[in-house]
Amino acid sequence: MSAKYLIRLDDACDTSDLEKWYSIEAILNEANIKPIVAVIPNNKDHTLIHNSPNKFFWEMIKKWESNGWTIAMHGYEHLYHHVHRQKLILPFYDRSEFAGLGLDIQRKKIRKSFAIFKKHGVEPTVWVAPGHSFDKLTLQALFLEVPFRVVSDGIALRPYRYKGFDFVPQQLWNVVEKSYGTWTVCLHPDTMTREQIEELRLSLRRPEILPNIITLNEVAFDGRGEGLLCWIYSRLFWMKYRLVNTIKKLIG
Image (cartoon, rainbow, N blue to C red; front, side, top):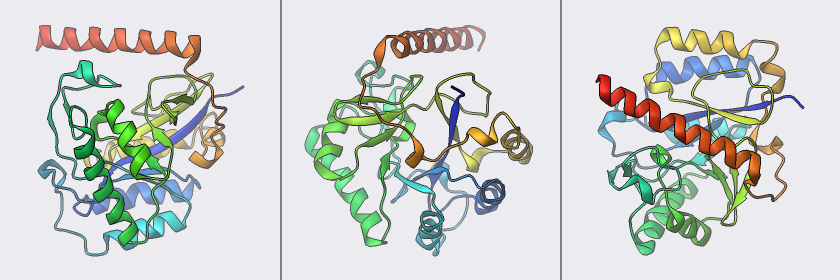
């Protein structure tokens, strides 16, 4: 069985760099690719302010939704606090918008986020945590506050069930050919250069890639847990991740 790929665009907010987003939108539309787009409903992260607020932002999101793009809830304000990564389900960073907070606070953030989407007539169907940073209480809060049960994240070779949610793994940050599994490529349009956007266009056209790009609706969920093969892949991933970070610190 050949590998399947999903494309995910992170950090869509009302101050995004529209020129870059429109360039990537044109590339995806030309190839008939329907990505996951992770939307920040109430951005307060100053590093994501690339333009003055776009008063047509939610109209743009609704257009993407009507065109078959999957809309993801990407946190609430995209503001981080320090947290020990050992507390995280996915220990990428020592920061989080949600992890380490009490259940009531996390529920309130998620409730406010979901209310903004609903106010603008948009229906998110998947969770994308800012910075991959969430804990078991985040999942509990989501379970209590939103109707969807899908998370776009995780280090595995295929979708798996965890704590009542179907996880669609996200393990790539550029288009790389794989021989097996389900792979989500996470892109951040705001920080991509023109050269990277052109490289994306060429990569998506490759015959071994384009026919195997799927939408979230085409992902096969079978209710299985992580399983041994995914567990081994995950452990190898985190060993490499820690080793690379250690080397960077030593030479940095």
